[in-house]
Length: 143
Image 1: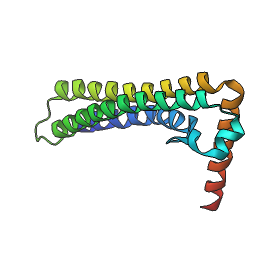
Image 2: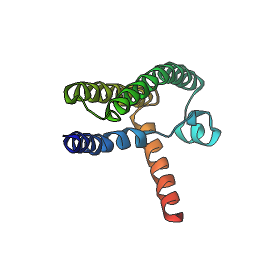
Image 3: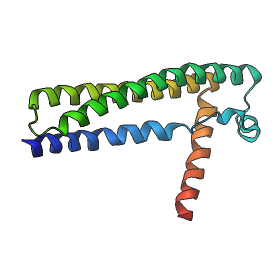
């Protein structure tokens, strides 16, 4: 029974991992629009920079709370899994809560990406993605 639960958790993790990676690769972390070279390359104006700042703060606040909730759900799942006699139904319910909390965090990250695209426009967004894809590929080649 434990093997089934662990196997199920592994499958779910492997299924959700590409989604998390995709969301994480859409935009770099931090306030990249505050880097003069990037802002200039994208042609960002002061209004766009201020909008990005506001959206970053709003999104980051939400992500802190969502990440905290996800970690709490993970802790509860780990706690159930450490018991000698596992309550399969309770463990599966907790797994579902953990998955939902992780999904909410991924959605918030993706909402930020959508907001950024709306603020800077399609052309600048494509340029930004290309810039970071080249940068990421350069780092991978060095390793």
